[in-house]
Amino acid sequence: MEASLPSIFLGAAFLVAAAVYFRSLDMGGSSAAVTSTATSTTTTHLHFFMHDDYTGPHPTAARVVSGRSLLPTPSSDGDRDNATADESTLSLLSSPRQFGDIVVLNNALTEGPGGDSPRVGTAQGFAVRASEGGIVSHLTMHMVLDAGEHRGSSVTANGRIDMDARVRESVIIGGTGKFRFARGYMLSRNYDYDLARGGVVEIDVYVQH
Image 1: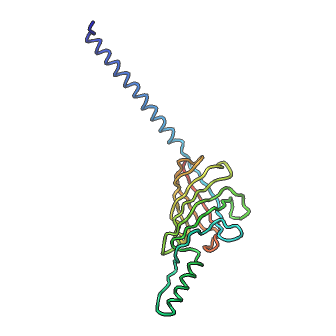
Image 2: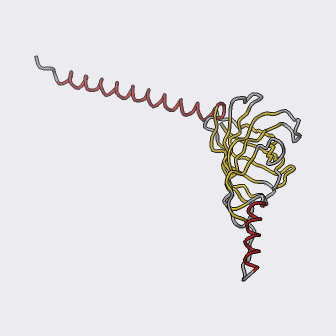
Image 3: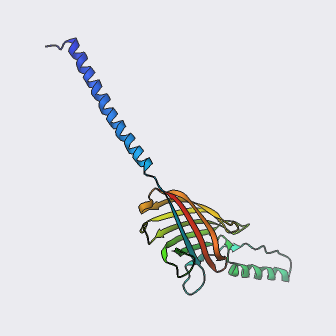
């Protein structure tokens, strides 16, 4: 028996209504998920001191690749050429910072600037001396937290470190644990620091996660 025309229209209308209903459920679920993620973002301020030690019985930072001297070495004739070569070699061996240097870090992070201050984590990474005209490095550093409410989590900083600047700003590019999908910035400043021996650097991290 052939279906009547009204029955066909009624069936088609039912299918269209069902499709619209299920589509609205899918869109509503997606919107709820996006809203929940956006409202869960928080900002955390981390403050500690990094001990960057190039000397002493147990150094925590080391130059593993030596570049060339940042100091200009004029050339001339005769004995001056030999003297210049000697000066260049000496500066390469003795200069605390050279263009192309690669330095690795495994530095303690503490609550206060003193060596006996409670340890809260470790800063691990590397820096590449990237400028011929100053003490400028490209830094990649993971700050792994060992104490407190964020124990087991880490944040990663990446940026340009100009040692002539009073305050250096780097970008927080990610994290682990409680800081997954982290973004933000890091401010660092010398607390008690010497280019040849290292020292203490004060660090503030502002991270959204």
